[in-house]
Image (cartoon, rainbow, N blue to C red; front, side, top):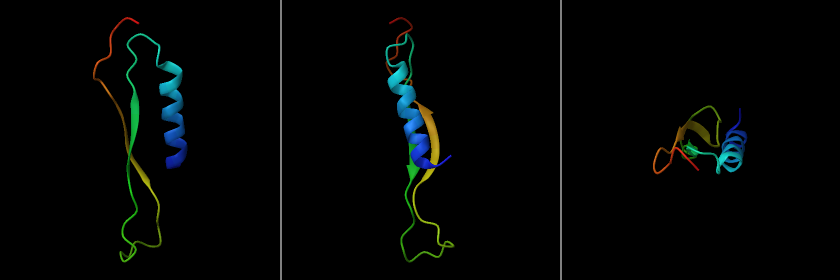
Length: 62
């Protein structure tokens, strides 16, 4: 899955479930492209490094 698709998927999940009891938001963490002077086989862009859940402040009931 591309980075952009991952971001859209996570944001959609957060918006759809924000009013659900016990909801924990997720976020996509990413890493930018290396500097232009680095030899890396021509790959440029953003890579998704992880998708994590924010466990702060959620309640068990709405």
